Image (cartoon, rainbow over all chains, first blue to last red; front, side, top):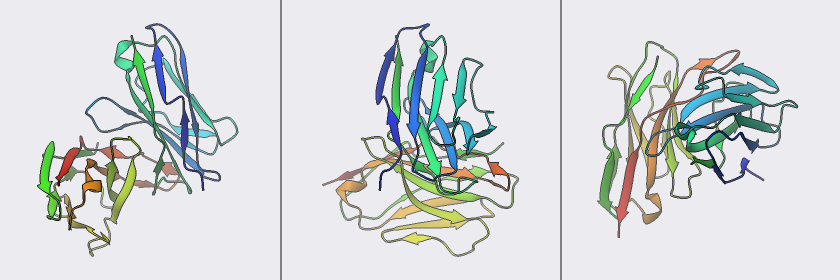
Length: 114
Length: 117
């Protein structure tokens, strides 16, 4: 079956622009996670959804970052007024049940802010 | 807060050899999960193996096995009969279960494993 998909795969934004990154989880998966992976580093947790409810957003680095999952399926991570330090790969993962015990990752979106 | 440490930034072995990747973690929790993920150059993260902290028996998946030492907070990955396709970044990760939700995964910085022909 289809895995987790993310779009776009690559995004170049000028500093100050807003961007929106999309994640399509595996159909039926309850839990959805966003991670940020800087170059040469491990992923870092950003936020977690259980269905449409955002239960944890403690990892979002600033109030410029906003995530939503309005119908409990597709999720969008929005970054307003992008800064150079936002350049990273943004990974989405989904899990069948609540708790995220086994997470399936998408290919990521590489964001470059110039 | 939990931390995960991978002390080997890069390792290189010959094809068919056995290699062990190290991982240590720090937590005050008693119930948690540990994972090894593989990230090939294409970037998609793949789960290699997982271990529940309450299980004493070390997890194995074909050529992959772990050495879980709970008291020492150590969780190493052994790859037997290494293959060229094993070349990738390997990340050790930690998670605490949360009955009402999830804490997300805490990752180490990764080990770049290179399998030489």
